[in-house]
Picture 1 (cartoon, rainbow over the protein chains, first blue to last red):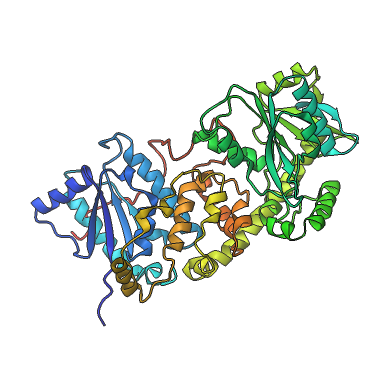
Picture 2 (picture 1 turned 30 degrees about the vertical axis):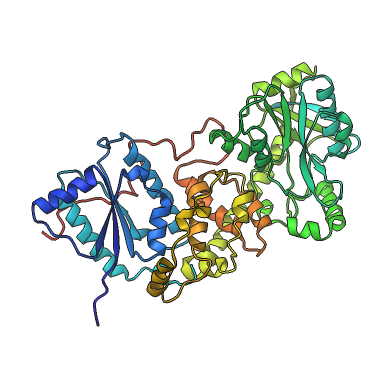
Amino acid sequence: MKEFEPKIVYFLCDWCGTGGCETASAHHLYYPENVLISRVHCTGSLSAVHILRSLIEGADGVVISGCHPGDCHFETGNYRARRRVAVVKSILETLELGPERVWFRYVAHGEGRRFVDTAAEFNDHLKKLGPNPLKLRRDT
Amino acid sequence: MKGAVIQAKAGIADGILNFLKEALDKGFFDALLLPVRVPAGDSFSYILMRDTSLLDGAFPLPPVMPVQGARALSSLTRYGKGTNRIAVLMRPCEIRAAIELHKLDQVDLENIFLLSVDCPGVLPLGDYIKDPRKGDALYEKVLQEWIIRSPRWACDICDKFSMPHSDAHFGILGAPESSLFVIPGTTKGKDFLESLDIEYHTSVKSWETKVQELTEEISKKREQTLQALSRDTRGPERLLGIFSKCINCHNCMRVCPICYCRQCYFDSDALKLTPDNYLMRAQKKGALRFMPDTLLFQLGRMSHMGLSCVSCGTCEDACPMAIPVSRIFTLVADSMQEVFDYVAGRNPQDPLPQIVYKEEELKEVEKAYIETYNK
């Protein structure tokens, strides 16, 4: 049987997250091909609805990476993003829809290694969890 | 806590209305916003009035809550404060919603005088409009015996039924025979009582004890009920089973006092897509239910207004399919507000959790990166 390959949506902020991704490519570091990168202007501009919609419409997991605390290009975006992720996680936790399918981890511009590691680690984590039950539901 | 004692010989409603009449006559307010029975007699609506003769038809505690008071107040002060001073008499959940809307810049409280009253809960709207007479008789009993056990779910487990952050509060519980307590909550409230020459330094200990006893009792019940509810709603199977009846009318959003956006994201073109997009999604899922995005609407709305949800139950009253919307929203809102140690409507000074942050917090949300993975 073919091994389960999770579909991952990776939201990166325009500044540090994307920079980390570029550093990884400059160093020829590889991340799993089933990771779909989605650039957002700032993690603070990412709405909870985008995370929920990804999970309902086909993603097995969502990971969000932005600047480290204190490094946000807009000063407070990453702190706000952290609060927003907490809101989404609390919804998913209360209703048991899989809060462990949402990750939030800082990646700085120079941390290419950290970026590919996060993608690989999340990929392995989701392989263990199995397919997201929500994405297979036709009655959503 | 100190307060004043006012006469209520012909019942609670009469006592409150006479008191308001006097305040209006003395010119402390220019107008009143109160629930009044509609001419057809089968419902109630908020009426903005200056004429004291209209007060006779007013109900400080109507048996139902067709329009959430905070919503009425936000349409009144949409363009900021007016020059008139308006007193609004609302239930505690309506006051709490008004405070949340004030934080969201949707209500201007400057020239508004908030009056609240101990609330025994209301009847489910659907039951009441089927037979208003029966409802009136039942509610009369609720008021006389002061059974907080209202048949409505949201009211049955409401542990914030008294003393919200209002300017003045009418205390019914524990008040001496044929009278009421008026308890000032702010300096505005104290000024008000002073201007009416009412002495407000009487102890309201009996009211405080009664409220505390009842709050403790209901809090326990709320916890148990929510725990049981949580067992029935966990997981996609159960949750989608509950929402599968949804007809996407979005009534719950339209009546919600907190959902103030003039253009709801879920009504916008962002979710209206081409046939090819729907077909692609149907292929992935095996099939696609129409109208799509039901679950996204419910969960998305939760993420938008959950932190300010006051569990008033208006959404459930408005649902034509009898989906227990308010139960699921209350369940999620309670745990969401707990994350930020926030209680919606508790205090106008508490900032909204979405607009502030702390540098050191929510470490459990961050996924720690400890060592190099796959080295």
